[in-house]
Structure formats: structure tokens, C-alpha cells
Image (cartoon, rainbow, N blue to C red; front, side, top):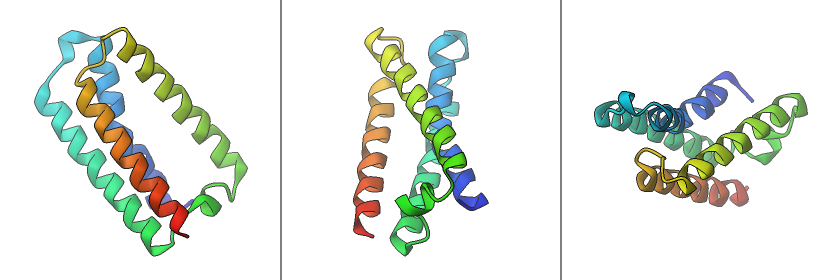
Length: 116
């Protein structure tokens, strides 16, 4: 995985982390900051989808180095578990919008990764 793709993967999770912090610390809730992070995350997602469409990023490149892929998968899984718990506790900040972001981005990734 090259540096640009790795950075985009991290930036793609920015809205998730912002919502997580804002859920745990309600005094930090700020719609403008959330929407800016959502815009950055959406841009990163679009970049990743473009790279997938061009064939530069696929399951093969993701799992090319297990030493990189396994920690990334554990990180992603744990982050989603925390977001699910906060959703069921009805504490997730901007929960509906965040889950739409996650589902739409995931569908795009699954569709484009399967194309290769």
C-alpha cells in the first residue's frame, strides 16, 4: 500500500473519529467541525474509489503485506464496534448521517474492488 492510499484510508476515518470524540465529550460538539471532517472524509473516499477504478488499489494490494493489513483490519473492526455500541446507547453524534457515510462508502468500495 503506497503512502497516498494509506493517508487516504486514515483521512477517510476522520469523520468517524470526530463523531466518536464529540459523542464521548458532548461539550466538543460542533456541526461545522463535523461537516468539515465529513467533507475531508468524502474527498478521501472519492480518491480511494478513483484509485480502485484505475486498478491501483484492490484486495490484492491491501493484503499484499499481511504485516500492514492485519493491524489495519483490527483497527477498522474495533472502530466500528465502538460506533455500533454508541449507536445502540443513542449517544453517537450525527449518527444517521455518519452511518449513511459509512454504508455508501462501503458499497462503493465493495463494488469497485469486485470489478477487478
